[in-house]
Length: 181
Figure (cartoon, rainbow, N blue to C red):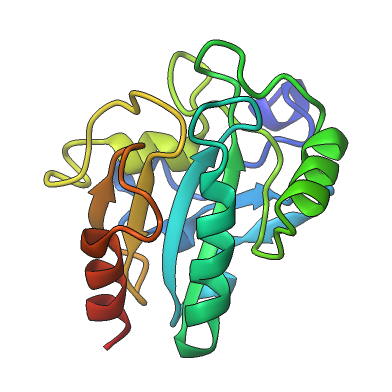
């Protein structure tokens, strides 16, 4: 029996996370359950964010959507990963999360099925993102919701921003604009 049979709907990278060299090596389910190879975002700058619907930072959805709309034609994609790791602030089903995001914040950027971003059940993508060997300057455990990882057009992680870095913060905008050049 394989892990894929034990955990249906959970997709694994073709290599262990420690052997991965970019986000493009992972496939995760979209919020509506369809497999999404992150390789489809090759050539785009990706802002990867662990999100939650009942967090003090939840209003950042509006800023993330504004960023996506402002820069998507220049090559930015925002990727939202709901996670319930911090004080149970994302308790809903994928359907409820999708409804909340679309009605309250009019989110149009890609949203994924709920994942774990820390602990024993951490999804392989977040194992890679937080791995200090794979990403020495950006690795380390996720401390809260709305942590942001910026990956360049080749899927290499180039920057990390904490929850308090609002989507409209100058440091985040500067990093996105530099990556898009």
